[in-house]
Image (cartoon, rainbow, N blue to C red; front, side, top):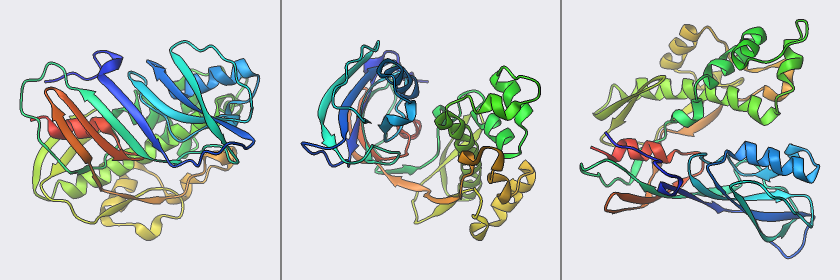
Length: 305
C-alpha cells in the first residue's frame, strides 16, 4: 500500500494556461495559489468579499483540495482586495475575455508517494479514467437522479431544505456549476464502466478496484475513443453502451433536463488513452505533465507495483 497527500506539500499542481495575457482589457487575470482549499469554495468566498456573483469569476477547471495548486482566474475588475484563508492572489495581467472551462493546456504535477518501498514503473501513456475525486461519496448517484428527473431523491441525498414540494426550487439554490458537476459525475461513471468493459477483454497488466467499480490497465495503447453519454450521442452507440444504459434504466433523451435547462448535456467523445509527458522519478517523488481533464492520481494507480 501507499499514501498520497499526507500533507498538502506532497501534492503540487501547476496549471499550464493557454490564456492570452495582455497589458489591458476589461478582465483582470490572477494566479490563484491555494492550500487545502476547494476551488469552488474559494471562488464563492472571493465573490462574496467583492460583492459580485460567483459566475463572474472565471477559471479553467477545479483543482485538488488536499494539495497546493496554482491556476489562473479572471475577475471583471481592475482592483481586487480580498483576504481568503489559505489563498494568495497574484496579478498577472489583463485580457478581453473571462477564463472559462478548458482554457488550459494541462497541468504539471509533483507528487510524493508515501509509505511505499516498491518499484515505480516508468510510463508514457495511461488510461484516461475518471478517479474518485470526480465522484466523492454521492456525486454520481445525485447525477443519476437529476438525469432521471427524480428531483425529490436528489434533494434527499443532498439534505436540502424543501418548501412544500418545490424540489426544483431547492435544487436551483445550489450554484449551477455544482449542479452540473453531479450530472458530469454520472456521465463519468458511465464512461468508466464502458471503458473498463472494453479493456477487460484485452491484454490486462493490472486491475484496481475503486468505489464504483474496477479499473483495468492494459499493456498496449491504441487509437480509441468512447463517448461521454448525453443527448445526441446515440450515433456512437455500441453493444456495451446499449447494455449499460439498459442496466441503468436511462435513455439518451434523459440528458435533456427541461426543468433545469442548464443541466442539459450533450454527449462528446473522449480519448481512452492519454500521453503521460516528462515522467520522472526522484526517490519517492514523481513528476509529470497531463493534458486537461486527466487525473494524476490515476497515473499513480498505474505506476505503483
